[in-house]
Image (cartoon, rainbow, N blue to C red; front, side, top):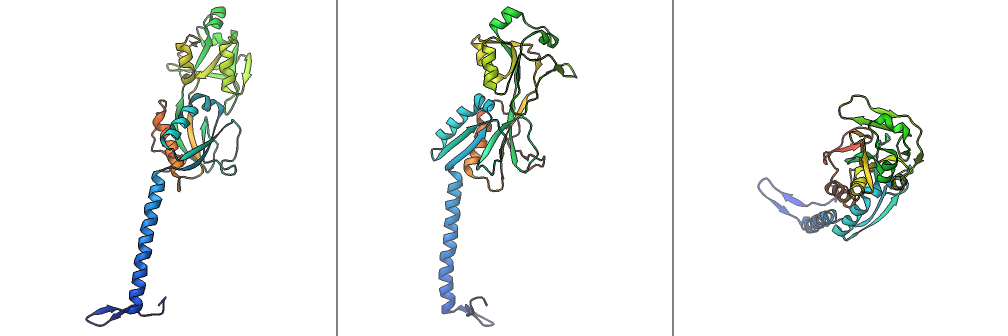
Length: 272
């Protein structure tokens, strides 16, 4: 009906193809072969990430782990390039053209899809010289008499809250800090200069403790861990360059302790 020609001649016992039907058949076979070839090419592209990946992350997370992750990503996938922006500002991921962002801390309610990567464990630290000059605190209440270095960037609240595995209630340090700083590198620099006691990600502090530059303070009392997520616009048509970057983050990071199969939109609904 569509072509307005007879393609098959039928009788009660037999059927045969017409000249027009033969022409349609030969071209249809070629079209189907082209479709199959398109599928194969698309699958190959999906297997091999390529193109430019635009990614954003906080300055603090970049200091902890982003550099080695990007280096390994570029080594493993030679057909990709990366543009990375280290910033703590809030921005529209889609409007500014980013493929994904790595965000630490609570997430705002949105339509973006998130992938839980893991968490950053924090502790309190100070320089050896500072502790030698002021003595080691014996309990969290002693922190009021010390110089406190407080991180105020990102989603962090101004102040310091500590939890203990054997205590139900957290301890809120109410003493005025000696220094407030909105980047993690500022906290680290102040601690190394002996200005006081502050919190750092253990991934950053452990090497400095091993080198004797920092010492743990009140190790039984810990600041809350911070969850880390990859955030991107949609997982319906997730491109290979984004998918393998997120998978590589889970594979490479020793602090990743969440189910790598879970995708969760920031509004709380699960997606697989």
